[in-house]
Length: 293
Image (tube, rainbow, N blue to C red; front, side, top):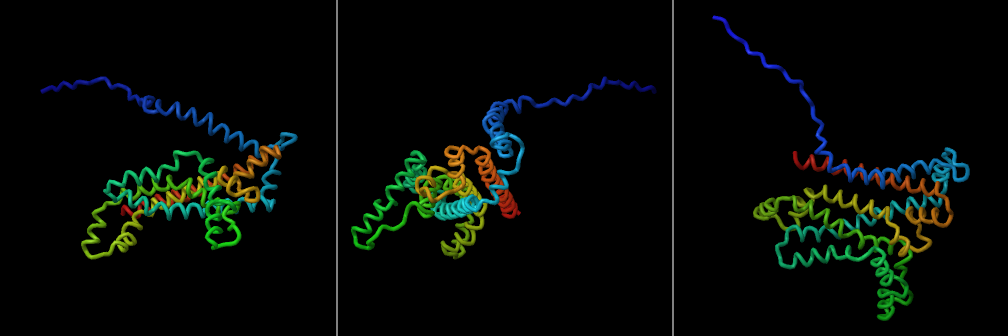
């Protein structure tokens, strides 16, 4: 018996590029390209340009790594940012834990108070701390009036004042970062440990703290990068003698009109923050993988 085979014409396989998927990203990408990537590229090129002749040169980079004052400013920036990151994370952790676990009616008020500093400008908050910490400020005046000290304490125009001011400025961001991490931890783990007889502090130390390490790393990273790029707070609370990279870039542009050297400083600062962000993100991803094994 003969069989009849029906042949159907094969249509060519067409791979359609999903333009509709990437269409919403076109406008944000264009904005980032014009207002971020292009200026950063111009600044990178400017750092290799001679200030007078406009020719290619590495003199500005050689000057940067041979100038002791500039290297001291870079080291001061790293120390300041590291101290701010540690202080912010330590202060934000208990507050974020309370917000993540509390069911009290005061939770909304505490959350509002934690975010409230962002409702005022950075300059306004910095001036508030300047009034509190300066030689004739609230703290020194109160201590002198009570007779505890005879001379004002050096609370401003130094590293201490800048760390205090930046800690207040960056604290809300760290609270939000840690809050997201702590909310991802199952509360039943803590309840099970308490049912088995573990004290509250032991539960936090052996369960909550290890599981929230990725959030701690994220908080440290956010605080470090924000503190390293801050200008207003170090300029006002640190004074003229306390120079960090952001204030030194400002001086090179406004007072010395040395755009090439200012671009070198900005590029080094950007590279430092990118390296710290890369290391922090890699560490956070590895910790996340270990926790989910």
